[in-house]
Image (tube, rainbow, N blue to C red):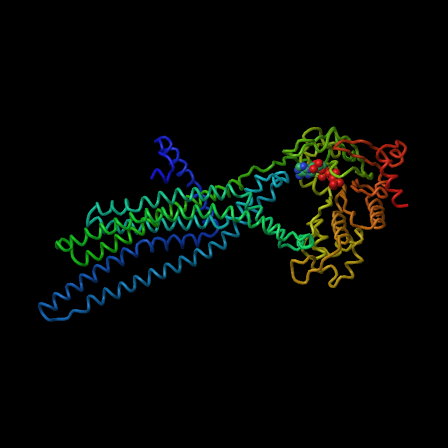
Length: 617
Ligand SMILES: Nc1ncnc2c1ncn2[C@@H]1O[C@H](COP(=O)(O)OP(=O)(O)OP(=O)(O)O)[C@@H](O)[C@H]1O
C-alpha cells in the first residue's frame, strides 16, 4: 500500500486529508439546488424512480428464492405422491417477470429524466457563466489566471452538476438496495454483511485517490489546454487561415499542437494505467471475498441449515450487494471528482465583481466638459506606466486629436475615459464630477466609442449598425440615418439585400466587406448613439482612403457641434482639423495646443507634420 500512496501517513495528516476529502462534498447541496431550480418536476420524478429502482432488485431476489423453494417442494410432492403442482411456481415466475419489466421501465424512465435535465441544466449553467462574464471588468479578462478559470468552468462545468446529482441519486438507490439486501442477508449472518463491505473498500480508496489526481492534472494543465484551443482556432478559422496558408505555418503550428498532446497524453497514460492496474488488483479482493462467501453459503446448504432457495437468494443478494457497495463507493469517489470540478465553476461564479456605486446623472458643473487631472495609470503586472500625469480639458463643442507613436498610450487614455480601467492616480471629471461618481448607465449613454479593433459582428448589415444603440437596435430608419453619416449608405444600397444582407462568412449567404467598408460600418455604429455627447474615434479611419477620412472628419465636426469629439489618427491631414491636439510620447504629454500653435512651437509635432506633408507632395 505504501508504494501506492508513496509514503506512510501520520494520523494528523490523515485527519486533515479526510477533512479536505469531506470538505469537497460541500458543492453537492448546491448542485442539487441547481438541479431543483432547473426543473422541480424532473427532479422529483428522478427521486421517485431512484426509490423504486432501489427496492426492486431485493424484491426480485426474494421472488427468486420463492421460485426455487416452490420448485424443490413441487419435486418432493411429485416424488412422494406423483402429483404435478405447476401453479405456484408459474405464479412466482409471472411475478418475477413483472418485477423485471418494472426494473427495465424504471431504468428507461430514469435515462429519459436524466437526458432532459442534462439539456436544461447545460443551458442554465452556460447562461450563468455568460451572465457573469457580462459583469466582469476588462482587466479580469486580460488576467490569464482568471481566464483559465473561465475556460475550465466553460469546458467542464455545464455537465458536472447533473453528473453530481445523478451520482447522488445512484448512491441513494444503491443505499436503499443495500439496506434491503442487508435485511435479507443479516438473517444468514451479520458477518456476511461485514464481508460484503470490507471486500469493496480497497477499490474505493484507490478510486478516490485517482480522481483527486486526475483533477489536479486537469487544473494544472489548463494553460496547455488553452494553447491547444487557440492553435485549433488559428488553424481552422477563416480570419487567420489566409496568413497560415501564405506563410505556410500549417506544419509548424500542427507540430506545436501535436507536441502539447504528446506531453499531456503520456501523463494521461500513466494515470490511466496506474488507475486500472490498481483497480484490477484491489478488485480481486472483492472477487475473493465473494467466493469465500459462496463457499460458506454452499457449506451451510449442504449441512441442511438453509434451503436451496435460500442459497440461491443469498448468493444473488451477496453478488448484487457487492455490486451495489462498489457502485456506491464509485459514486462517492465520482462525486468527489465532480465536486472538485464544480468548485471551479463556483470559484468563477463567485469572482468578486467590481462595484460601480456611482449615482450621479448630472455633474456639479454642467457644461464644464471633460477634464483629466494629473492622471497616471499602469497596467496590472506591467513594469512601466502606460500614462503619466495627464492633464487636459475638453469643452462641449470642441474636438481633440491624440497623436503619438505606436504604444505611446493613446488607446489607454480612451480606456480610462470609458472606465474600462481606473486611474491609479489623479481624477477624470465630467461636468465637474469624478467619473467614479457617475451612474454607470448615464455615463455609457453619454459616451460613444469606436475602437480600432471594433467588432465585426456576423449579423445583418443593419444590425451591425444598430448595435450602436441597443434601444434602437432594430429601427431601420435610424440605421439608414447613421449609415449616411458614416458614409456607408452608398455601398449598403448596392448590396444584394440592402440593409438586410448578412455579413461575414460564418453563416449561409454571408458577404464579406473590405477593410474600409467595415470601418464605415463601425463609424455608422458610432453615429447611432445620438444621445452621446462625447464621441471617440480610435483610428477607425485607418483603412479608409485619405479623402474619405478628411470628408468623414469634416462631417463629424459639423454634426457634433455641441458635442466633444476625440480622434486618434496617424494622419496629420485630419489631425490638423481638430481644435486641440495632444502629442503623447511614452505615456506623457509632450506638446499640447492647436495645429497653428504646435507648428509655431516647431517641436515633434511640427517635425512629423512636415515629414508627412512632404511625403504627400
Ligand atoms: N491590456 C494591456 N495590458 C498591458 N499593457 C498594455 C495593454 N494594452 C496596452 N498596453 C501597453 O501600454 C502601452 C500603451 O498602449 P496603447 O494601446 O495605449 O498605445 P497606443 O498609443 O494606442 O498605440 P497605437 O498607436 O499602436 O494604437 C503600450 O506599451 C502597450 O504595450
